[in-house]
Length: 179
Image (cartoon, rainbow, N blue to C red; front, side, top):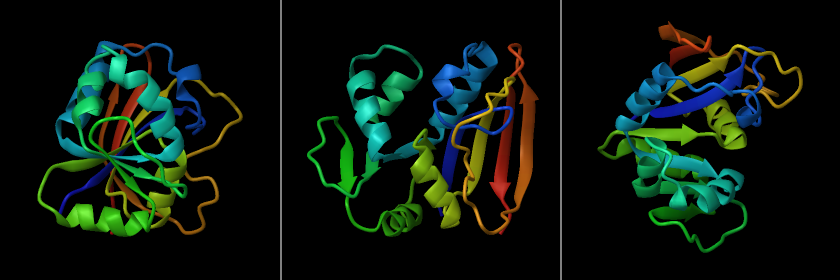
Protein backbone atom coordinates (compact mmCIF):
# COMPACT_ATOMS: atom_id res chain seq x y z
CA UNK A 1 0.00 0.00 0.00
CA UNK A 2 1.21 3.48 -0.89
CA UNK A 3 1.97 6.10 1.75
CA UNK A 4 0.40 9.54 1.92
CA UNK A 5 3.26 11.88 2.81
CA UNK A 6 2.53 15.41 4.00
CA UNK A 7 5.40 17.84 3.43
CA UNK A 8 4.85 20.93 5.53
CA UNK A 9 6.79 24.07 6.38
CA UNK A 10 6.17 25.17 9.98
CA UNK A 11 7.35 27.85 12.35
CA UNK A 12 8.95 26.85 15.64
CA UNK A 13 5.63 27.50 17.39
CA UNK A 14 3.74 25.28 14.94
CA UNK A 15 2.22 27.80 12.54
CA UNK A 16 1.79 26.30 9.06
CA UNK A 17 -0.13 29.15 7.42
CA UNK A 18 1.75 31.36 4.91
CA UNK A 19 5.19 29.78 5.40
CA UNK A 20 6.58 32.03 2.64
CA UNK A 21 6.49 34.80 5.24
CA UNK A 22 8.80 33.03 7.71
CA UNK A 23 10.82 30.38 5.82
CA UNK A 24 13.23 32.91 4.39
CA UNK A 25 16.51 31.00 4.11
CA UNK A 26 16.01 27.75 2.16
CA UNK A 27 19.50 26.23 2.29
CA UNK A 28 21.07 23.38 0.30
CA UNK A 29 20.26 20.76 2.96
CA UNK A 30 16.61 21.80 2.72
CA UNK A 31 16.76 21.56 -1.10
CA UNK A 32 18.31 18.09 -0.84
CA UNK A 33 15.50 17.11 1.51
CA UNK A 34 12.88 18.43 -0.92
CA UNK A 35 14.53 16.50 -3.77
CA UNK A 36 14.34 13.29 -1.71
CA UNK A 37 10.69 13.90 -0.78
CA UNK A 38 9.51 14.48 -4.34
CA UNK A 39 11.67 11.70 -5.81
CA UNK A 40 9.48 9.12 -4.05
CA UNK A 41 6.15 10.68 -5.13
CA UNK A 42 4.13 9.98 -8.26
CA UNK A 43 0.88 11.72 -7.29
CA UNK A 44 -0.01 14.88 -5.37
CA UNK A 45 -3.11 15.90 -3.43
CA UNK A 46 -4.02 19.59 -3.37
CA UNK A 47 -6.78 21.66 -1.86
CA UNK A 48 -8.67 24.03 -4.13
CA UNK A 49 -7.07 27.21 -2.76
CA UNK A 50 -3.54 25.82 -3.14
CA UNK A 51 -4.39 24.64 -6.66
CA UNK A 52 -5.63 28.10 -7.63
CA UNK A 53 -2.51 29.75 -6.23
CA UNK A 54 -0.02 27.26 -7.66
CA UNK A 55 -1.65 26.86 -11.08
CA UNK A 56 -0.87 30.50 -11.81
CA UNK A 57 2.75 30.31 -10.59
CA UNK A 58 4.30 26.90 -11.26
CA UNK A 59 3.49 26.31 -14.97
CA UNK A 60 5.82 29.19 -15.97
CA UNK A 61 8.34 28.75 -13.15
CA UNK A 62 11.87 27.43 -13.52
CA UNK A 63 12.33 27.19 -9.73
CA UNK A 64 13.75 23.69 -9.46
CA UNK A 65 13.56 21.03 -8.27
CA UNK A 66 9.87 21.61 -7.58
CA UNK A 67 8.69 23.19 -10.86
CA UNK A 68 9.54 20.18 -13.04
CA UNK A 69 8.01 17.83 -10.51
CA UNK A 70 4.72 19.63 -9.79
CA UNK A 71 4.07 20.46 -13.45
CA UNK A 72 4.42 16.82 -14.55
CA UNK A 73 2.99 14.83 -11.62
CA UNK A 74 -0.69 13.81 -11.56
CA UNK A 75 -2.53 16.20 -9.26
CA UNK A 76 -5.83 15.43 -7.47
CA UNK A 77 -7.68 18.53 -6.30
CA UNK A 78 -10.27 18.46 -3.52
CA UNK A 79 -13.09 20.92 -4.09
CA UNK A 80 -16.69 21.51 -3.14
CA UNK A 81 -17.20 23.56 -6.32
CA UNK A 82 -16.32 21.67 -9.51
CA UNK A 83 -14.23 23.55 -12.09
CA UNK A 84 -12.37 22.94 -15.33
CA UNK A 85 -8.65 22.65 -14.56
CA UNK A 86 -6.25 24.58 -16.73
CA UNK A 87 -3.10 22.95 -15.38
CA UNK A 88 -1.97 19.73 -17.01
CA UNK A 89 -2.25 16.36 -15.23
CA UNK A 90 -5.04 17.62 -12.93
CA UNK A 91 -8.04 15.61 -11.78
CA UNK A 92 -10.82 17.50 -9.99
CA UNK A 93 -12.46 15.51 -7.19
CA UNK A 94 -15.83 16.92 -6.19
CA UNK A 95 -17.07 13.83 -4.35
CA UNK A 96 -15.64 12.11 -1.30
CA UNK A 97 -11.97 13.00 -1.32
CA UNK A 98 -11.26 10.51 1.46
CA UNK A 99 -12.61 7.70 -0.74
CA UNK A 100 -10.38 8.84 -3.61
CA UNK A 101 -7.34 8.90 -1.31
CA UNK A 102 -8.11 5.39 -0.05
CA UNK A 103 -8.46 4.19 -3.64
CA UNK A 104 -5.16 5.86 -4.64
CA UNK A 105 -3.41 4.27 -1.66
CA UNK A 106 -4.54 0.86 -2.89
CA UNK A 107 -3.07 1.34 -6.37
CA UNK A 108 0.52 0.36 -7.17
CA UNK A 109 2.97 3.23 -7.28
CA UNK A 110 5.08 5.59 -5.24
CA UNK A 111 4.20 7.89 -2.41
CA UNK A 112 1.25 10.27 -2.64
CA UNK A 113 2.35 13.75 -1.66
CA UNK A 114 0.47 16.54 0.05
CA UNK A 115 2.21 19.89 -0.30
CA UNK A 116 0.87 23.01 1.37
CA UNK A 117 -2.91 22.68 1.38
CA UNK A 118 -3.25 23.21 5.13
CA UNK A 119 -7.01 22.62 5.29
CA UNK A 120 -6.75 19.45 3.21
CA UNK A 121 -3.79 18.16 5.21
CA UNK A 122 -5.63 18.76 8.47
CA UNK A 123 -8.68 16.88 7.21
CA UNK A 124 -6.53 13.97 6.00
CA UNK A 125 -4.84 13.85 9.40
CA UNK A 126 -8.24 13.82 11.12
CA UNK A 127 -9.32 10.94 8.84
CA UNK A 128 -6.12 9.03 9.71
CA UNK A 129 -5.05 8.99 6.04
CA UNK A 130 -1.57 10.52 6.44
CA UNK A 131 1.12 7.89 6.88
CA UNK A 132 4.21 10.08 7.11
CA UNK A 133 5.04 13.68 7.91
CA UNK A 134 8.07 15.43 6.42
CA UNK A 135 8.32 18.66 8.40
CA UNK A 136 10.62 21.63 7.85
CA UNK A 137 10.61 23.66 11.06
CA UNK A 138 11.93 27.22 10.68
CA UNK A 139 13.77 28.78 13.64
CA UNK A 140 11.20 31.51 14.20
CA UNK A 141 8.11 31.84 16.40
CA UNK A 142 5.48 33.82 14.51
CA UNK A 143 2.74 33.83 17.15
CA UNK A 144 -0.47 33.82 15.15
CA UNK A 145 -1.69 31.71 12.28
CA UNK A 146 -3.32 28.38 11.59
CA UNK A 147 -1.54 25.31 12.83
CA UNK A 148 -1.47 21.84 11.37
CA UNK A 149 -3.60 20.30 14.11
CA UNK A 150 -5.93 23.20 14.89
CA UNK A 151 -9.12 21.69 16.27
CA UNK A 152 -7.79 18.13 16.57
CA UNK A 153 -9.80 16.12 19.07
CA UNK A 154 -8.12 12.74 19.46
CA UNK A 155 -4.43 12.16 20.18
CA UNK A 156 -2.38 10.82 17.30
CA UNK A 157 0.94 9.13 17.97
CA UNK A 158 3.87 9.42 15.60
CA UNK A 159 7.24 7.68 15.51
CA UNK A 160 10.30 9.84 14.82
CA UNK A 161 12.21 8.49 11.82
CA UNK A 162 14.80 11.24 11.34
CA UNK A 163 15.78 14.65 12.57
CA UNK A 164 18.43 16.84 10.92
CA UNK A 165 19.56 20.38 11.55
CA UNK A 166 20.32 22.61 8.58
CA UNK A 167 22.93 25.38 8.13
CA UNK A 168 20.21 28.06 8.27
CA UNK A 169 19.00 26.74 11.64
CA UNK A 170 15.91 24.92 10.42
CA UNK A 171 15.08 21.40 11.54
CA UNK A 172 13.97 18.58 9.25
CA UNK A 173 11.81 16.12 11.17
CA UNK A 174 10.31 12.99 9.60
CA UNK A 175 7.58 11.02 11.37
CA UNK A 176 5.61 7.85 10.63
CA UNK A 177 2.09 7.32 11.97
CA UNK A 178 1.89 4.73 14.75
CA UNK A 179 -1.19 2.65 14.13
